[in-house]
Image 1 (cartoon, rainbow, N blue to C red):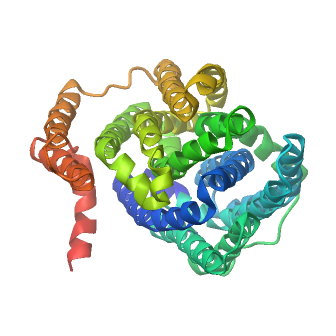
Image 2 (cartoon, helix red, strand yellow):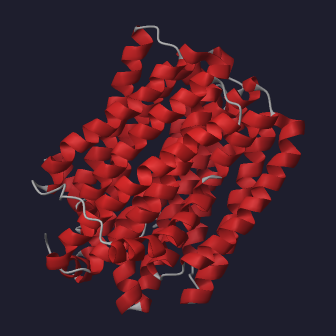
Image 3 (cartoon, rainbow, N blue to C red):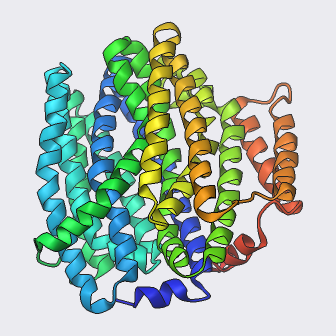
Length: 487
């Protein structure tokens, strides 16, 4: 394995992070296209109530996966970035062993919650199947951890797209066979086995070392990983918490509407998370060696987050209803209004994901736990008030408010740890100009919704490039990828 410190401390590290972020974002965009096809098959085949049950179970599994997977992943990549090659393999072996210990406990807890909540038997069985698939994927993540630390984003982008493609094929086959709800959860097992199969091709023949169970090493990983897991899970469960609450206090139809919008949002939410994962090793090295470099990196990533968040919001204003009708059929058209509200969260999610990963790089996980807990109480209270009266629309409003609160709280803690993180006034002015011109295209009379949405996105990006909205470092780092793609 290349020495992680050499890679992360090199002058090329920043460019590698930007290019890696672009590659993973591009793979995620391709995954969105594939995911739209998957969602269309699922929503149209299952209908509104059963789709709501499907998304509820997958949200439960995602929460468990974030607890058992994300915290250990981030801790492992941060530790691996600081290890020399002689001890790195031992760390990965213990990392794999710890996954094997945690997975059965998490799976039992998942199924137990489904039983206590009184879910129908098909949802309980689905929880067991989807949870099993998730933890197979988590085993492969142990082997792929070194790719993250070595900034080899191409392999990780391939895995991201593979998961989406296998899911699409599995869902399409079940739809063709006329399957009911439960078998669709088993697709996650096939996805997990596919990732395990390709992991040695990407990470080398020794990708899966024999698991180790060194108590002291695993205790250290858990001690570091649990605060990270708690911070990450609290920051990522707002949508999923609200749909679980809706499954208990609202109708199956309204839960289905919110679940349809959540299904559309999930692929978008994944983009800032992937970018943050690529950036973490560099941020960790900068936090250790050079605080000025750390602030510079955070500010650059934050500007990228603003651009991406505003772009998604502008496009979705007109695209929400026709996209949901296209994906789920006429019965899901009301979901467009829910999605139009929910997408407002994307700007806040993009920013607080970058800021959260920066606090983790600084070892300030307990700050994250504090602010996430406060915001989680806020979103739960808002959902409890708004859902009974406004149903799915109220749930969407509660999530946006919770994400806005969380972004403000995380910035507060990050500012205390690093000093002011400044989004330049000139940059924000350029974003506003590009957004205002793009918004004008949304009100062109007679233009179909999807055409207006596409035009607004194009105007925002083109105008932004022309007036210097995109930072020069990002343009310079992406240029080699453009040249490579045009050969």
